[in-house]
Length: 450
Image (cartoon, helix red, strand yellow):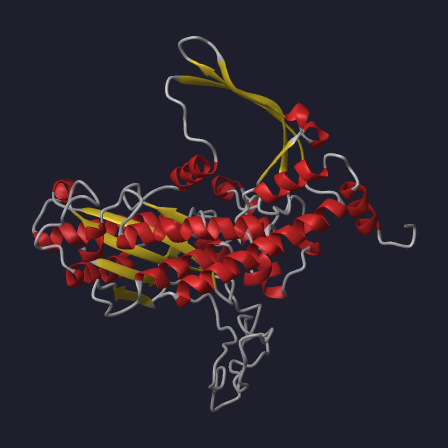
């Protein structure tokens, strides 16, 4: 035993516990969560009329007198089992808004729908991947810092140079960080602009547009190789009542596309004035993609779009190469972060600008680990489709017993810890792998049946 690794010794100790079977059931119920939350307490279900106890659960009967529940972290780099569950929820949430389901009528497939991409502007020349040369130039000009303005190499996507500035001193790091900090406001202004363009095209007063049509959306943020956020979004035009209502006759795909492109080109958000960087006019990049989603299958498939969005929701910082999965609380954390020089420069810029009083409302130091970006990875309008909370409640109702009519539930819970011991983590990882393999096999069987 002494010659075995500590994790193996701990796993053997857990397996010899008389309550091992119950503990294994808890780990399986969490899907093999890598960092479960430990709770102590009880739940009692009473008959509302007689006060009779119908059901009682107490952690005193469980191993360690605690209940393990999922951490629900969306990042695959932090907890792969929970990220898979989150990706599945995201897929169903997005797909419901595209094809119906989850209390959304299937008629939404016939509405004007677009899959759009809004990019960040250029903050300086960076190395690019592709089959052609990176940045070819006939001359050998240099910038004011003595570095070449071009690059004649051909970079593969995994190349560490891809996304890095040709000259870090020429790169506008303050503009990049402040653009990230205002990306949420840029999106809000963009949506307002789309509504304004639609109202103008239809000859409707903007304040009366909700009486004629409703704009619904779901968007996801994706970090590019240059560590700049791009926004991918599904935009749908409904009638005034939302998904259950047909849009007006003037609400067409072409009109929605024109409104999206016009709004993206016109939106401007100004940063607070600072003696350090002045006042910046922040805009979307010139590359705007708007692809119609057709019910007849001409164009991107609804399931493929939903899967595309779900994939990006679970990506962690180590996968995107942008930022870290944990907050940076000191300058030492910035220096110690295992990131590229380009990303570290962005973190340093956030930390430096975050110390200036004019940028205090942006909380740049609190968001230095995301390079200043403060928005949610996934966001949606209220009427787009269902919610994460509704999906989780539906799953819990499916797994547990049906609710008892005329019953009252009393709950008393408190947090007592989190995580696994070394041996428990080893067993949980094995359970997570088995469950993932079962899901993959079942998916292949469904595909084989068409």
